[in-house]
Image 1 (cartoon, rainbow, N blue to C red):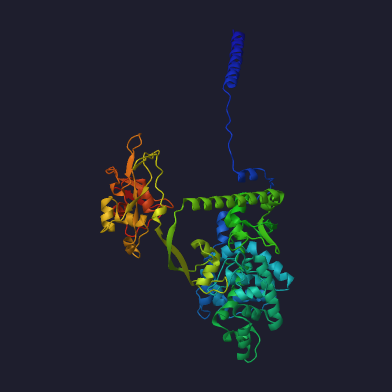
Image 2 (spheres, rainbow, N blue to C red; image 1 turned 90 degrees about the vertical axis):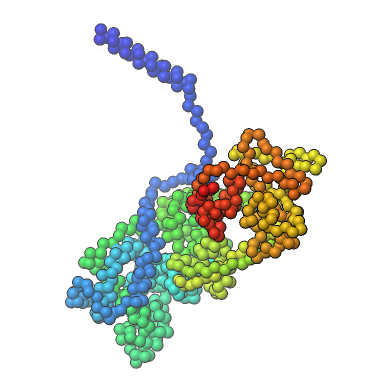
Length: 613
């Protein structure tokens, strides 16, 4: 019995298997071809390296944050070296540690009360900032040390970049000093740092560090004292020479300190205090934040064609923020290409491998995108010429003031307001691309008051023409026609109010359709014709024929088109009160303003509007 049951089970399972196969054969799965973009097809063909570098987005943000720079800069400029700070650090212990630092450093590190006050102030108020700075150091310090070693400059000067810029390559001072080493425009030019509309090498960590090392080396040949070299870097060699003369010929920083500018008096002590915190951070419980990307994990590649960070980001799947961090000298987020110069792009090593293995495909994609953009632009221009009626335009200029913020440059401001860098420089009498923090810039925008040539306004094409009438019909999915332009011949004694009332439209709509503003309201007297728009709702599937007589005064407009039901509308990007009113037949701009207590017509994306509220 057991054998029979077993045999029956086997047969049953076999039969089910055969049945399943037949079903599978009779109902094959149809795979739908999925179209992919040209960009995706290029990326799918890339030869990829297995090595990958994990980038922590929070740490990436940290690298480009300016808050530490602003806090430290304020401290150094305002700190009172004579004011004692309440912090638990025995003076004798501090003296011993400073002496130990002095023994292994070319700097003359002496204890004094002012230095103790600054060290205690940093420990009391900036411990968290130094934890963050020590993470940034793992990326930047190797670059500094390499540049200084080539010029026989003390490696300890790497701490000066902390004082100067808080290790932020995008830092810009109130005076316009820029980059990790805070070079002024003319000083940067003097040390062969390229500065133009696309590039500012003062923000390039490698090139700016080489220039800083060159400066330090030359100043040491003049003064023969590294503290005086630092003082000259802050206030200029001229001020140091004056201080030496006023002190009676003394030639050490601590002897001439009182004759130097006030900021420079706290500058060198701030540098030494920074060096102390780095040397003894463990003893004070300062735990460096984790550094995810280090300099040795990146490499450069020479660029053969102009490309934007957006294109690179799309092709290599590298966040634009990371590209900005690794390539801070490119001001407009574009790597330019000049025939007589070489430009390099720094990337994580795994991305360099992908780029070099697929260069031909990458440049082919860039050419394809460039060609497509040109074709789209030409098509748009041609379409605009065909569709645009002739107009008489009056240009009205409007000036607004923009206050420069941390991280701003002329390129970013120009992009924000859709103007050129040359225009910004012309409007504000700027001779260079440098701008100081807090400076007020004039931004001039032009608006056009348009007087339409009524004879060029194209009416809706007629379906049929018979005798003296034109039949016009238009139906869309929502049974609502677009706003149709018609012409009204201005009669003797007419004014805007009487015309608006005659056609049951609002005064504000009538002004907008004909480009009338408070400045040109008197144009009504000289205008022979006015444009009148109508929104027509069709309640049934049968197109409604609206008869327009050659005598425009007999224009027939459908009424009672607004349902007595309130709805909410959320403003989208590009919306205007006029475009929103068009979506709801019978609703005017004045209605929307009235229902939502809007006075000046200003609306923003995301704003909720009540319709027929």
